[in-house]
Image (tube, rainbow, N blue to C red; front, top):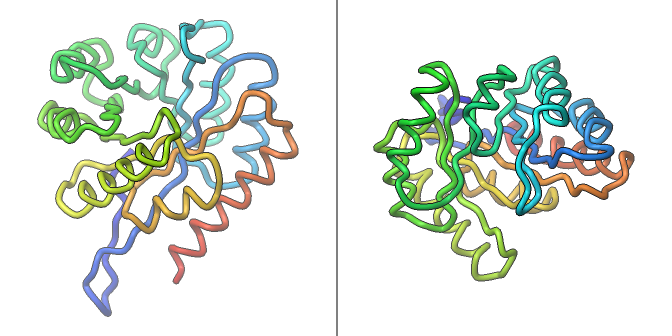
Length: 221
């Protein structure tokens, strides 16, 4: 996962060229939903994240890792570097919290220099800057509680980060194509669209197709 901003020859101004990331929970029907999503749009990465309170298990995660990689998308696991190494995933996503430097360093020691190690900074500028200093491959901002205040903070942080820092930025907790399009306009390098665990396969396909077309429209403007 690399920074995706490009300059136009006419204006010499950076325009967003956001790429799509999917966030999916393992479980019944996850493979079918991911298959539909990967066929509906160009997807750069898949973040495999357990539902709150659960841990990732190799048996349910491996098919998702293999599917993502077979379709050319990076498979990123939530937190578990050892499992990522075992399943040959492409990296891990470090959850918000203290000791960012130590956790990035520990993950790098397990996965090596080629792995993608991203840090979820939540709505914290401090965690984000600490992640950048620790050598994170991306910094993510989210709005986990779904409140208007959290979404506003996330959007402000995306714009702030994109204007100043070179480390790629991920917008998390995006539920629909409108939110993805907004993250694109704010300067996010990756927009992480969440796929609800109970969403029907046909609805997943429509959602991802709509989202992918919105990003493509922005890129070609």
